[in-house]
Structures are given as C-alpha cells and as structure tokens.
Amino acid sequence: MTARARKKREAIPQGVVGRLPIYFRYLTELAQMGVDKVSSAQLGEALDFTAAQIRSDLSYFGSFGQQGYGYNVAELLQQVRQILGMSRKYSLVLVGAGNVGKAIGSYGWFRAEGFVIDAIFDIDPHLIGNIHGGCAIRHVDELPQYLANRPADIGVIATPKEAAQNICDLLVAGGVKGIWNFSPAHLDVPDDVIVENIHLTDSLLRLSFWLNERSQRSGD
Amino acid sequence: MTARARKKREAIPQGVVGRLPIYFRYLTELAQMGVDKVSSAQLGEALDFTAAQIRSDLSYFGSFGQQGYGYNVAELLQQVRQILGMSRKYSLVLVGAGNVGKAIGSYGWFRAEGFVIDAIFDIDPHLIGNIHGGCAIRHVDELPQYLANRPADIGVIATPKEAAQNICDLLVAGGVKGIWNFSPAHLDVPDDVIVENIHLTDSLLRLSFWLNERSQRSGD
DNA sequence: TAGATTGTTAATCGATTAACAATC
DNA sequence: TAGATTGTTAATCGATTAACAATC
Image 1 (cartoon, rainbow over the protein chains, first blue to last red):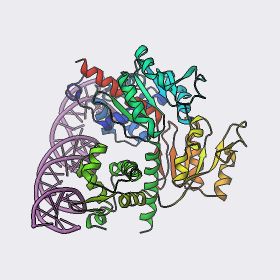
Image 2 (cartoon, each protein chain N blue to C red):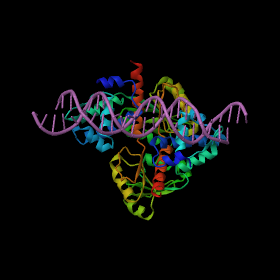
Image 3 (cartoon, rainbow over the protein chains, first blue to last red):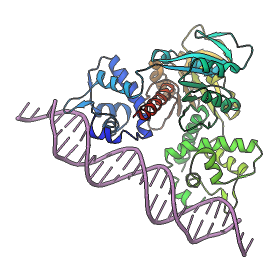
Image 4 (cartoon, each protein chain N blue to C red):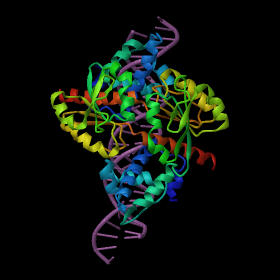
C-alpha cells in the first residue's frame, strides 16, 4: 500500500466510489476482449474522464500500475473487484414481488457475482407460495422471524412508497446493514446502515430538466 | 427573476439538478398532507441537507420564498415542476420488453406525469404483437420507420448490453434527444443528446463497497 | 413592532486537474 | 538507453456553508 493510500484510507470521497463500478465494467469488457494492458489515458478516453482522475482515484487504494507500461487489465480488474467488496458472497432478501421486484429477481448478473437472493416477501395473498427464481414468495409478516433464523446482508425494497419506511425498519431490526431501495421514498436509518437508492422518477426528471434546459438555451 | 438567477442561468451545476427531484418528491408529500408552508430549515431537516444549500439551489431559478415566512408549499411545488420541465408532455419509445422493460412499462407514475410510452420494440418474434400497457410490441427493425412517422422525445433502452449502443444509434438517428439507459453500457452520443443512466449493477456495487468499508474500519 | 426567514455574499471546504519527478 | 506512464504534489476550480443585511 502506498503512503497516499494509507493516508487516505479513512475517507474515500463518494465521487471516487461512484466511479469504481464504471472502471469495473470497462475493465471486465477489456478482459473479455483479451486486452492485456491499458493506460490511464486510454481508460479516460473510453469513459470520458481525465487520466489524472483515474490515477488519483486508484491511488486511494494502492499502486496498481507500472511506469512506462500502464496497468495490467486482469490484475487491475482483480484489484477493483477486491476493493468493491466482490470477493465475498452476500445474502439478499427482496421485499415486494411486483413488476420491479420480479425484474430484480430475474437479473442473473447479481447471482453470478455473489449477490444471492435467498428469500422474497410480499403482502399479496395471491402471490404467497409462488416460486420465483427458485424462491418461494413468503408473506411479509414472516420477515422478522425469517431474519432471526437466517441473517441477511442486504435488504431490497421494491414496495410501494407507503410501505417502504415500515419495511425498512423491519429489515434494520432484523440486522440488515445495507438497504437497496427501489421505492421513491426517503428512508431514515441508523448511522450504521447504508442506503443505496434507485429513484427511477428522480432519474427521469433529471432527464426532463436537461432536455428542457437545452431547448430553452437554444431558443435564447 | 433575481439577479442571481439571471446571472447563473447559463450553468446549473449537476448537483443542483440532482437535488431538484428530491425537493419535488417531498413537496408533493407535503402538499398531499395539506401542509401550507415550509422553511428551508424544515426542508433541510427532512431531507438531510443544510438549509443554506436548499436556498442556494432554489435561487438559481428565482425567488420563491418570503422573508420571515418561508415557502408556500403549493407555489414552490408548482415552480419546481416548471423548472423540471414537467409542464409539457413527453413521448417515449421503449426498446426491450424483457423483465426490466415490462417493469418500466407498467409503472403508472410516468404516464400520470406526462411521460407517455407510445411504442414498445423488441427483437424476440414471440413477443411481437403482444399488447403491453395498451401498446402493441413491434419488431425493432421497424424502429427507424416508426420514428420517421412519429417523432419521440425520449428513448428508453432496456436491452442487453450488447444491443444498447446499436439501439442508441437508431434512436439518435430517429431524432430522439434524450436517452434513458437501463443497460449496463456506456453509450456514445452526439453533444446535443442527453443520456441518463440507471446502472443497477453500479448501484449494487457501491452498496457492496460501503458495506465492506464499514466492516473494515470497525475491524481496525 | 419583534421575530423569523429569505436571498446573497464571502469564506471555507473539497474535488479535479496540470505538471513532473520517479522509474519501468 | 529512450520513450512512456505512473503516483503524487501543488494549483485550480467549483461546490458548500456560515453569516447577515434585507424585509415580510
């Protein structure tokens, strides 16, 4: 570990963490294409970042390159996987078996990368007992008991907004340390629980804003 | 319009745009609860921002509050809707009728807010002709011809990664100015086209990173 | 009026970038 | 070796925040 990586160990900026998965995706592509080496300049060119930013980001975690050469793709990919916490398995419980829940449950990438959905919960009596992706759908009333017996790392919330905070509280009470929230709700959690939001509506509204901004300006 | 709003008109920071939909969501809730007024301090408390940041963000677009009073909820909500470009309708085409595409197509909020999916495309012959949300699924080969006859504002990409850039090119060639990308691909588009990404895998990996970081630190 | 809260400025903070010594 | 590219520093840039005059 470099001096800088050690020094900065205690506070990784959110922006850096936001870019790591982008690096991961592109390095995976390069590896699949059989590319051996890559420079920060090449990475930056492909991903619309500056080379300096990529080197700076990586240096938070160590020295993975070689002067005059660049980075070995396979090695850097392995390091980024490690940094992202992909060297272990995660147990997930999914709450909400509607359209969004079903889409999440059917996305094979998660399981392949070690994020395994072990249980699915819903409140609709008609869905209880149905099998989805090898998982029987259970009633949400069983959630606390289930978590007491089989702790989970991550709770996925794919419920309507109204139920989200309540489900979140149950998940946290059950020992879940990470919440992946697909509902358009702002969740309150204790300091030791991490929330990662997928706010579809926010994303569409940002797109709408820029579309509008663009046309306003060209109309000036 | 205030002096500041005028001055800053030409460059709205991305961070500001990222927060506007959050304000919109919370103001909608307040309005539904029948709350009349709200201060920047109250908004900040509820949403985990500083009051100064909220006032600063809003001041990019005008002066919507009153000293000693705060903001009128209904009025500010109306202003934020306007700012976000929600005062008009948008025509969307959705490409990819798999699990993710189906989930997007069934999400009623979009239509209610003026984002109307007018057509759905897929490459799977078995799906062609099926009706989804009042839309017949068409073959993706018809996409260019369709856009030539019925221009769309936004193209939604819910295809596998491999097809995404190709579909994106077709959408752009067809005159679409906004891309809502659900595939884990980095899309190249011309300068006048806006891409808004929903990268599910990136989001899960950020969660994984923070979970891991947390446990590493507590283990120090 | 007195109390409250805005919109804005100036100060602070943090993130990005340019530049370069180190070195493969 | 000479050319290339890293990791890091210092400089720049931009975003956040604290403070406050203005004023409802």
